[in-house]
Length: 139
Image (cartoon, helix red, strand yellow):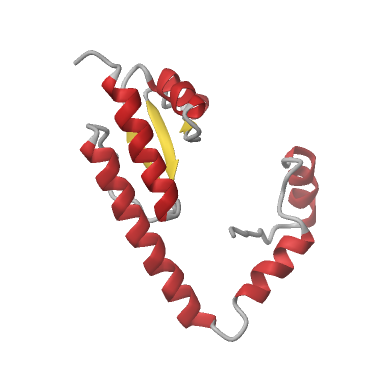
């Protein structure tokens, strides 16, 4: 569960409201995020950071095993990887395999993808999909 907020002057809040996405975090999701921390506080946050770091390391290893090197150290719940001029094709092919990654052309990085840290079973699916997809690409 990912939740964020901004403290801004009212005039800026109005401007942000005009361009915000339709699927911003609902008040129910905000309440759920707060409830998820009940009783755990800092210990729960530390546990979640640790789980995310372990998942990110596993994801970086999967990408590296397939010749897709992450660009620099990551601290978020996703990894940015330069994959070459076929980034959009890789995105589309993985999507057909049931794996969603984000192509980054719209963000000025046409040869990169972003892959979110997933649960172990999702990472196994990514590894299997990359095995199949990249086996079809001539070396």
